[in-house]
Image (tube, rainbow, N blue to C red; front, side, top):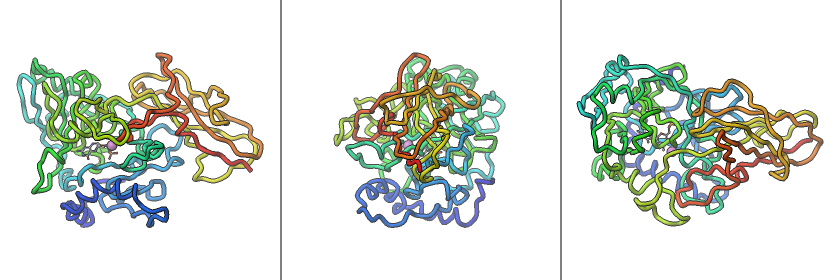
Length: 404
Ligand SMILES: Nc1nc2c(c(=O)[nH]1)N[C@H]1C(S)=C(S)[C@@H](COP(=O)(O)O)O[C@H]1N2
Ligand SMILES: [Mo]
């Protein structure tokens, strides 16, 4: 796979990076939400991600592409070709990955602020982490209040392996964090559209300073240079924190006393009552939650034959290890403990689980619920919130199974 194939097609993608595409990007979700029942056919893969596995993804819009439930496989790691895509802005020109080592990151809010190239960063340390990357809005499609935005089901998530330098190494090399800093703020390298207030569109997120301990500046994903579409040449990876906090094509990493005043931080990604606008005082969407779901047999693959069925799925502890996962075939009336399968790649990864069940012809409702090592159970349901964020309730994620 070569995900960075430039080609004139990506250039067309760039041309589309105008005000029109921007409007489409920010309104896409809303337009979908209001689409009539007989919605037009889904768009094809846009040129900048033409290398994705079209058969195994759902293209909501050019900037929102979801993995099908049946397409996660059972090998833990989500291949780049199937990994979801979410862009708040059109991606920068693919030429930024022509010379990856030359990409410059400005590190601020440390005792010795510096501009560092990826080549510099490569000398400062190396670590690898398996982590779930999950959009804050994954599961939004299951909220009863129908919040606006992309109606993601389970596929705005994946488990990927990142390699890069630990942020704490970089900070140590630059003399440590500035005394007043309480947040780590990352800024995306997109070219902002002309004529709009930069703060209203820029992708800049702040996370609590403690997240720095696990964060990486990553140049490799699943054994290859980070694909341009997934944030290459350099991505800020904050394990355990939802997608938006993992800044693609990161160009600035700042240790700040306050949260960013960019709209995406101040009034975006907050947990607000249904129908209400986000307020800067409400909780920001940061750490993910304990969650699991069934991937197979998925409804999209049709009925299965009576007999033994291997019910499998994924479970994530977000920031904690998992203790167990239970599976129900009757919509949560009764539960049986599933078995973890495959290696344990650590607390930020997800784990695959399976429960073999012998099924007679009929209709079933498959559900799973995870428990972490602190004995917390996955919630039965997540309260509706206006942004449709962090849906992790097991009931909403249950899927029907028809056995013939
Ligand atoms: N620079 C930048 N970083 C970004 C975004 C973006 O639009 N620009 N989108 C965020 C959101 S909302 C999500 S869910 C993830 C998506 O990552 P992916 O497209 O690699 O799957 O990236 C996050 N980081
Ligand atoms: Mo997201």
